[in-house]
Length: 608
Ligand code: FEO
Ligand code: CA
Ligand code: CA
Ligand code: CA
Image (cartoon, rainbow, N blue to C red; front, side, top):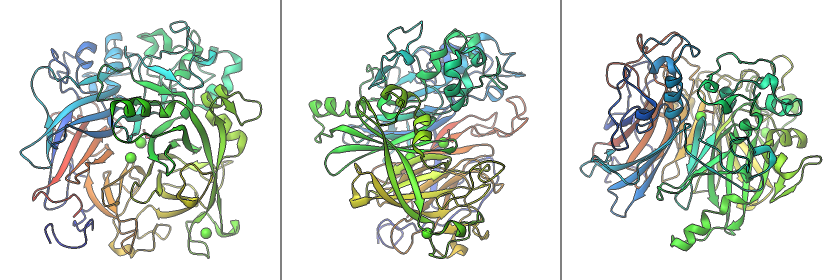
């Protein structure tokens, strides 16, 4: 056999051990390199990062901070160029500014630097010498390179809530043009070549919730915004740079975040959009699959303890072929459709779900589920709420219809090989604690520290349908811990895994899982397992990131030769600062979030 032997797509790499090293570790036979890091210039006329002379203008032309989602989209047909699209979820001011003391003590210009370090980047890449390694294309002006920032990038609202009174502000009386995108976490690449990105913990950017109109307070609170304090603890105090973050003055500004964003990297002049038809919550991300009848379905998670899984189904159908007319049409698919929320029921007696993770007597955490319709087009299915209210306050709609409270649903992604959908439920240490909801068959562990993987199979394989079966193929943790489960695979051959966050697939359909917050005490990393056949559950660790970092992306290129990983917040450890860093990765001075590519030295497919 050409590459290391065995069946095509078999994961034959030797797993790496858990570790706490201040570097990126990959298996024997592989190499890795930084593709781009925080502060690298991507627009003309901008210098390299100098933390002593940083400015909002510089940061607006440099790669942003805390890269999370990555998409790598081919540019041209020869496999030599690509567009990297990266989310910049949030900032660690203590690791960005020399002499940092408190958020309050930052200068207004430093607040503006932080705003410019949020958002997204598009960077043109080239393949290095025919290998699986990639680097940014040099030279002065790259036409596709782009920064989207919180300072000044206009977006356009689409869908039923666009222009609604709830989205109008003094600066935007028509309610159509929000500025910037916030806390962009996971995302997905659409079949028509755009990138979706989820606006997640937008609540932490606002002050003045105590003086917001009384009628808005319950919904603000349901989204995690303080309605009792003028300045919530650990506030980023962006109101000092832009007044719109003061809800006492601009109470609707919070409604303009928490959406799914769509960016077209192939059309650098295009205005990015926020799709109200896909609902507003702490969006982790969204991943699209084309259903058999041509409608498209997007699967989405709301990353909060006890929040919900959602599905959006487009009203219109995907037009294949890639012509300009087809693409124009496909760009409208996420603007109208039906939003559903998930209700899961177990098939084992409730008494057998004892909170310890012990398998019920039928040998599986599994059951059936329904997608409950919340809104179709501009028609609400939730009594007492209009369509715009259902979309803007999707959490309240989910509460009203009795959706299932999950253990923090992060990335949710369908396998394009099988159509089965995989959700990373990262953890929920409040499950069953105090007055909180107790364990159920889909969230079976009390005070769940390590999380689980949920598999959903739509009935008849129909992504437009309203019923499904589900199971937990992986219940995470140390395989020596009896509460873990790896699809029945021999646990002695499995790598320990904790806090799954992002999922991805290679072209053979293997499931790749990256982690955030490893509660087993070693560094976070990237894992892979077959998810069909006799190797299902044979999970192996492929990569680790430096201390304090979470492992994001991941993205495996269509030719399986490269895996891109985002190393987010390296050195984010209590007490660490830029002056006294807990990590000096990747350059040996202080920690910088960066995108890493890993490839096989012999040119073979990743994982083999
Ligand atoms: Fe930004 Fe849910 O992780
Ligand atoms: Ca069962
Ligand atoms: Ca995440
Ligand atoms: Ca993913």
